Image (cartoon, rainbow, N blue to C red; front, side):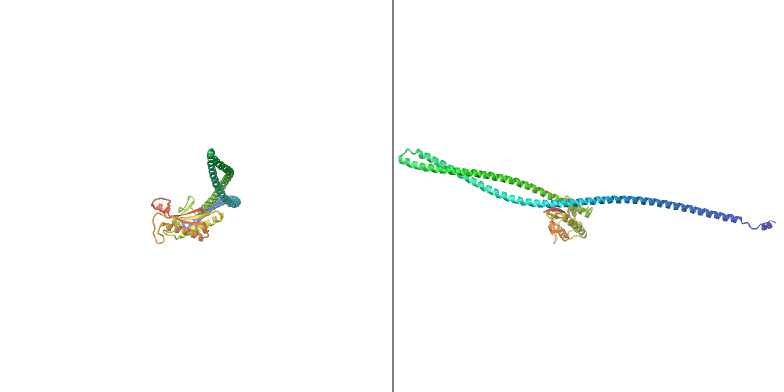
Length: 382
């Protein structure tokens, strides 16, 4: 009966429907979850993009401000360069005027020295003549005294005899006439001596005035020379500054006082005067810097780049280099010849070798040897 009753109700689809509905609900929940996650990711991406855009806008504003500051700084620098150019032109004109004045002063000094020498020679001659006149006056005075004594002696003998008296009278008259003549000569000599004394005083006054003039010219010349030395010092500082900027900060290249010191290993292999590849690069930079600064130094400024070679205390004895003197000199000459070949004027170059006799550090340590093996550059006056 139950079987018949079930057959009459038909199949039961409700469990399947419930399962399908549950599956559909789960799919919808999953889709909604995916949508929510995608919305969150999209929102975060949009927010990150906005933040990145705001950061880029801030950087763009900062770059614009920096560009504005750089433009203003460039304008100020161009104005400063213009002022420096004008100042340099005026300084060069002043230097030319100073050189002309110095040359004129030297000519005047030379002329004054020649005139002073002639005046001094004339003064010496006048003094010698005055001395001779004084000697003549002394001789005449002695002769006068002798004649006066002779007259006195003759007068004392007047009483001896008439003939003797006549003879004595004749002798006395002759002696008196001679004394009168000598007195006139003595007066003339004294007058001439006074004139010579006046001339000598005038010559001494002239010599004193010329001495003062020479002292003044000497001071002016010393001031001019000091100005030229100061100018050379300025160009030397500028050369070292540019060379330091070109070569960079290196421990094997140093500035010591007024000298630029290269370690020998930078330029040469051991016991050789052949410039290495690295040394050629450094010397090329040196030559370019020297040619640039040489164009700015006035032609009449007597400057020269002195290249000094030094070695350490360890002896060398080869066919090419019998001692460290030959090695240090050959290295200095190699640098000078290279600079000359690069266009540096030969009259502005000098080479000297000192061997091991001017060390920077005493002792026989490796550090001392390394410091003492060096090439020194120095701008100085001839």
